[in-house]
Amino acid sequence: MNGHEKMPKKASNLISSIIQCKCARCRQGDMFIEKNPYKKGAMKMHDKCEVCGQPMEMEVGFYYGSGYVSYALSVALSVATFIAWWVLIGFSLDDNRIFYWLIANGVALGLLQPVLMRLARAGWLAIFVRYNKNWKERPAEKAERMIKEWQNGW
Ligand SMILES: [Zn+2]
Image (tube, rainbow, N blue to C red; front, side, top):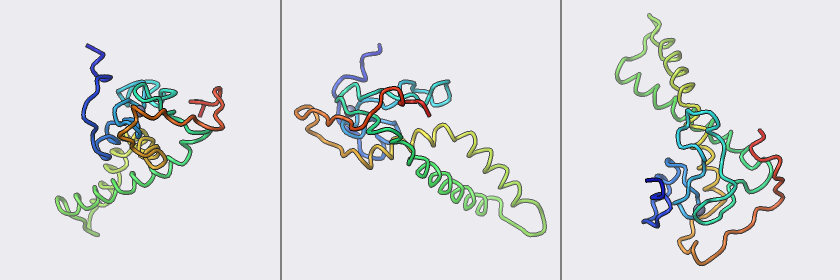
């Protein structure tokens, strides 16, 4: 069964809708065409939300700024792994444990990059598009300054 995503259901909260990369406006439609972030073309997005019609790209280069969000997520994750390593393994100046953390953290960030980039886009969209629980009654605003050929081109 593939039609179940479009069935109306209770809207999720902001955090879980970002984690699931849902449209910021209705929190039901998917932002990305491909569900698996590790598949080829995972950053390809729908032109607009399939549920409420919200354009996924507000203007040319809209997601450029999401790079900062994914950077911030990477930093936050590094802090988290640093603290976890500190508690579980500890750091010492007498051995190489801090380098092991650096390597492990670098590998983890590298592996998680596709997920972080998608999360960053979902978060970025949620900054500019407010959740509207009356999305059914109100049509989505049209994207401005949108050039079709430039979409997904960077
Ligand atoms: Zn939507």
